[in-house]
Structures are given as C-alpha cells and as structure tokens.
Length: 83
Ligand code: SF4
Ligand code: SF4
Image 1 (tube, rainbow, N blue to C red):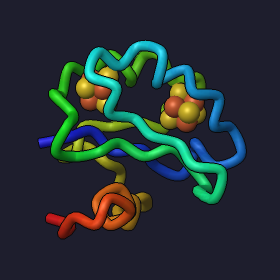
Image 2 (cartoon, rainbow, N blue to C red):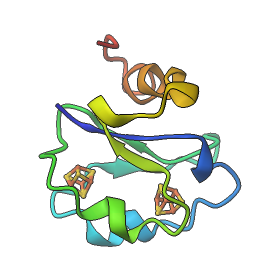
Image 3 (cartoon, rainbow, N blue to C red):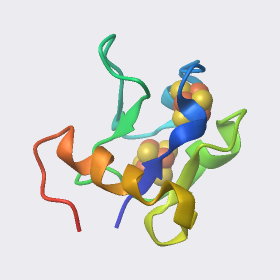
C-alpha cells in the first residue's frame, strides 16, 4: 500500500510533508505540479497526513473519488504501473 498526494498540493508545495516522512519517500521536482510519494518506499505511517496544511494526502484506499486520477500520477511519475 502507499499514501497518495492529490490536487490540493498544486500551487502549495510547501514540503511540510517531506520534513516528517521517516523514510524520505516524498519527492519534488521543479517540473512537477505537486510533490509525489514513491509508492514502493512509503511505509504507510500516516505522519504526512497531519503535516499537510491543505489535506492533500490520503491512504491509497481513501483517496476521494474526484481525485482518483492522482493515484496513477503518483505511480507513473516513478515509472511504476498504477494499481
Ligand atoms: S505515509 Fe509515512 S512513509 Fe508514507 S509518505 Fe507519508 S510520512 Fe512518508
Ligand atoms: S504538505 Fe501537502 S501541500 Fe505541502 S508539499 Fe506536502 S502534500 Fe503538498
């Protein structure tokens, strides 16, 4: 399993989540619209959820329907096949 970053991160990208992630699996790139979580490195600790000021992060199975496309984004950006 993994956690997923969704739409609310766009335009914010303050990296508050990066500071709390114990395994450094949240990545940024100037070319990306949001930060993304490497699905195979995330240990599902959930610490990033409360750190995010705009509630952009969800456990994979709890991503709101309207942001379902963000699941694939978090996989494809790391050249991984989306679930
Ligand atoms: S759930 Fe934990 S391991 Fe996964 S991205 Fe968030 S802080 Fe990092
Ligand atoms: S804390 Fe939230 S808004 Fe900030 S970079 Fe992480 S996911 Fe984006």
